[in-house]
Image 1 (cartoon, rainbow, N blue to C red):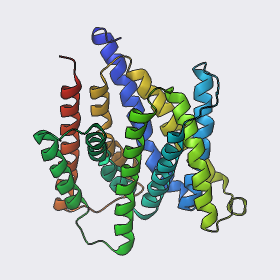
Image 2 (image 1 turned 30 degrees about the horizontal axis):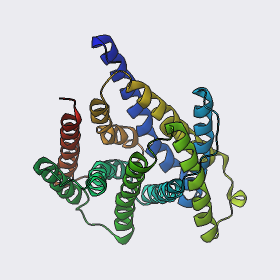
Image 3 (image 1 turned 180 degrees about the vertical axis):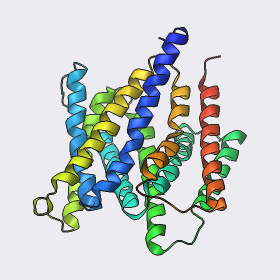
Image 4 (image 1 turned 60 degrees about the vertical axis):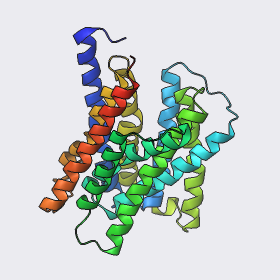
Length: 295
């Protein structure tokens, strides 16, 4: 599986490609929101992800089988809430801010893991989580209006819901194939997102925009399909902790891709907060990798 420098180099390249493609998604989604509402973009993102999940099943030689698991409905609901909050945050904030705040995901993931596994957090975890919280406050600590505060809250909530979703999958539906989980969770999510869309009184076809749909489709293709495929393929060659360490740097790539189109004015305090948040996430990733390594 992991055999020397050749395998390491291949795994490194695959994971760098994966995080690069995934980092393009927030930028593409932000552009799509100039033509679609956040609710419409969330629905079509779920819809396209279903199609690509099914294609992934076929590529891997799996058949689509009926899965009867009640937990998947909760997973789908949480995933739907995460997708809605993600597009809401992108509607209100720049991709740069959403990208950095999105790294708070690992903090919620660890807190949920501690809750489910009934383990007391270690001192390094507490220190890194505290640093991440402080870094987040510094990063968003400029004068914010109500819209920006709602955007920050939505960005934190989307990481919260996605972390809860992934921990629930890991604990409760771990025996199912990953591709099936991906397909069914997004299929169920689309039902809830459609309900949210209709509750807002938005009609899909009356606001049909090919460019907006194309951007959402491209984002789903690069981030939810190709990005994940490359990530899982890369895991065959390098350790999970090292792959996650590469993924932890994604806010830097998101900033690089989006800054020419959606620049953000950052003060020294905001920059120091971004660096502290990124450093704490990398620290958590390194610690988790060391702790889970075989002894």
